[in-house]
Image 1 (tube, rainbow, N blue to C red):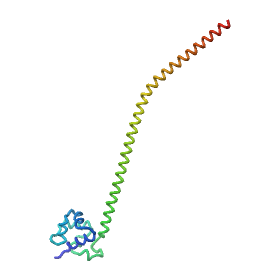
Image 2 (image 1 turned 120 degrees about the vertical axis):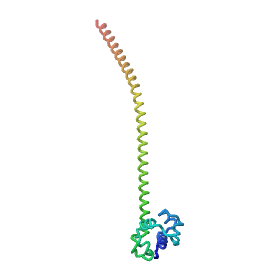
Image 3 (image 1 turned 180 degrees about the vertical axis):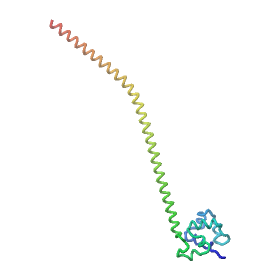
Image 4 (image 1 turned 45 degrees about the vertical axis):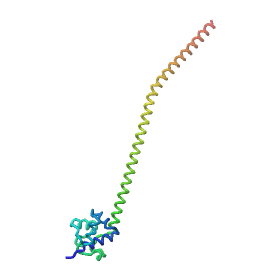
Length: 171
């Protein structure tokens, strides 16, 4: 019984506008292996046929028993191959875009944390300086207080002298 496996693999390579290497890469097969299928020197294993059919959304029956090239009406091909490839490219592009957005988001977070860490270090240094300043200021304020008290005492002493002088002059 004749089958169309080799013709259909050749047709899929042509329809995808790719090389045998590219088709092989999709299904983890070497170019030589794809070439043996196309030249009818070998037949793919059933699991390889299943993966090809699943990838291109083709029934196994249509892939084996029907020429896909002759059924351009899409009778056996559920989805257009070019559409599948374009969809896959769109999905990969979207995944890359999402990845890039996540990288940017996490980069911004890291920068924010670094700025916050730097800010906290600066605040800690200022607090330490303030603590030192407060001790210095307390000492300074004490000295100023003592000075003002001394000044008041001198002023009061002067007043007392003036009062005493004033009383002596009245007498």
